[in-house]
Length: 303
Image (cartoon, rainbow, N blue to C red; front, side):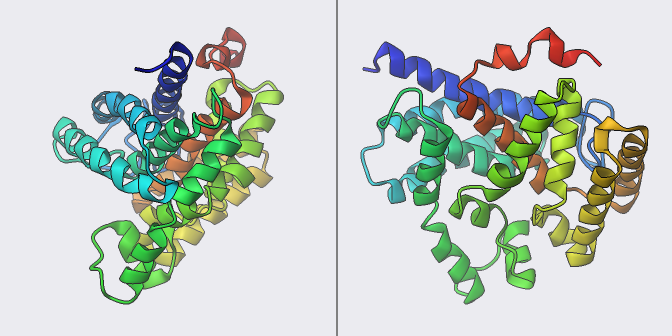
């Protein structure tokens, strides 16, 4: 039976994960991505599809946190246990969306992080961002073998990420997990903290952070369909927006809106960057040890 403190920590982990998942889709403009005002570059999904998907996935984040907490094996064996439940969650997601792949990539990265958070509770309650990151790195170690198998043609590619690795050598979500999500810790978190401390409203903090992530994330969602040239278009556009002041200037905002229009026309979908944005929010809440209601304070919604 769970102790009250540990039970509360597990619920908080799941709550933070669901909140992060919802915020990623809620911000606008988010070039190429689904938002409340745009379907981005997608033809088979919209904001309501994502609400349905998120509703289907939400209960699983609590379950994954509990699985991580109760797991008695080594950290390197945790991924197998989490994946079994992740596949069930994926099935429910596809059932909820009519077959549209809304959040499969995020389910992998965020589900692993939540499960690692549950496991990290044995080191302290509530777990810190640094503790969870270490568990993620160790739990993701077996993914190196999967990448080797794809590279050696012992494993047939079965996802966009697999093809991006086989053809272009980009490790995608697996590589991020193996290294403890460097895009989050070296790019996403510093950007999000900077925007929040500067007093931007929550939407603009998220959009600004997303643009920073687009400048560096090796986005396999883009690579799989558009190759390195498409990835460079995404990165170059984001770099220009950042140099123009991003959400803080008229020129920066105009550039972001221009990117939104261009990405929709070209079918560019930086879904990997969107996943890293959600993870950034999740780890920010862990790092700051603050409740979601504090990030939701009225001041962050003021323009």
